[in-house]
Length: 512
Image (cartoon, rainbow, N blue to C red; front, side, top):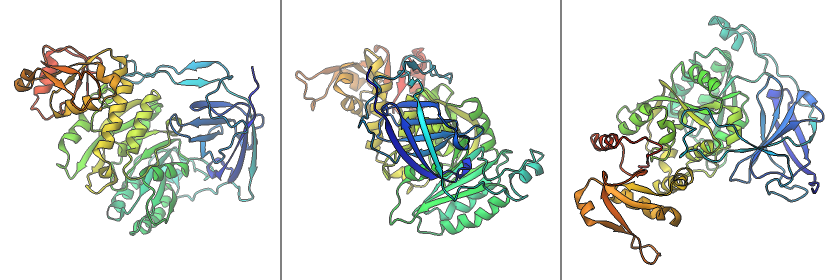
């Protein structure tokens, strides 16, 4: 076996929550960097109490994160700033230790054969040499005053211990901000009113706001820190914003909490949100935890709101292909920092990129679960001019079709598209050639479409062109991809599916 060349990377940052201050870190690894997966191992030395170094790379991007672990603290994460490896390799390991399949997730629905992906591969630990150099600025953080988290907890009958600034928070609220002046007061008041008894911090990243958002944040900083909630503020003043994905990544990078609670600047948390979602996240460490929501204005998106709030636990995994997007909406997300680092970061493509959907898909690829706290814990505001509204429907459609093929269709030898109308035909045309060949029929309830007998994709380059039969749904055979919108047929679609005694996830999947 050829001995791999030594590879060196340098990264730096302010890592005060580990008591390290400003640190310059040099890592030497005795094997090439992998394209995906995780490297971990004990260090030869343990400066400042560091016990492990980890590298996690995004499975589809030339990006990743280093992580330092210190006993009793959450992992420290920083971007890889060094891009040159002495062997020039970015290929997967060819001479490493044995590969082990990742254990099957215990979250609901992940054992379903049609929706499970291949196991994630985890590499045996390499040998890692570490050298840490602390700057003169490194020092222990001062203790917070008596009005800090210890006093706040004691007033509520909780623990009365004070938290020094060197101690990380249990929960970091991640708040990206861009021109949020009209809603920030209500949003930040909801952070202050949380009944969670553990330590909290608010991590704000200002994405080039031009209004009075920062003035409001500075005003609330004093109130929040007086109540024991540390406030960390970052941002930039570039002429234009960098986007929601970038802002969330920056807010996470500057935070210290073991758990991340995501919050949009125009939304409002109920007082019990962090407490209940933290309890769920502790029980489900590899899951995204969501919750039910109350929409504002109340009648703005009735069908979507019903879907958010009424999905059954198994449908949180089977209905991930629909046009609604993630089955728990992004502003309700809560997860462990360790799991976020395993999956993330968010895509930073900027306006028009569905960074939450892309992260959600990567989360599912990694075997992550989806759990919803069945209480309304967030006032979820609908704004026509929001960043979400800037994402083209065609962009979402393309990602959905690719994910459907990857997660489901490749496991099926053949399938039927339920709907011979516009949406069903559009799906057929959007499929890859291999997936199109698996379509044995369209099915419908419309007698006119059924009498036509077949559908021919005229723009197809195939010769001869395929003529796909159109059948009555009772004459068709599963599995089905349902291209009829939910909750729009007065219950007829749902009744027809029930009459066939089918199992969602095995016999059919919803796409529209």
